Image (cartoon, rainbow, N blue to C red; front, top):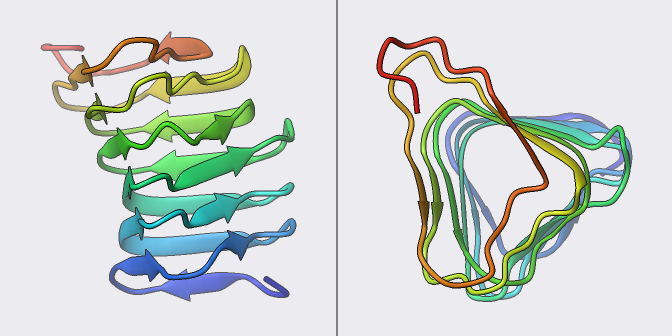
Length: 141
């Protein structure tokens, strides 16, 4: 990207998207399918939700890479390079049949919803880097 993007609605990536230090705002879902990638490269994104499947992935390699998800994060892909930076999730996190989706230790994932949140890991070898529980609801996680 050469400038910030604001998308009202959903964004289905049909090509790889490199933020290159820019910001991406999507009011709805960001869908990554069929080996598509979202590469942060010192960029940031604020989105409604994220769904990944079919060998797609997020590439977060720098400490200033940032992803803020108001809703759910669903991962159905093993090809994630979420190694550094931060991810905040206001909804549920689901690893759906995604064997071996490991997030790097230098990646901080914060669950910061204001309603009950769930984490579901189906498949062996899935892991968070650093997990922070900041949920403010009475029901928690």
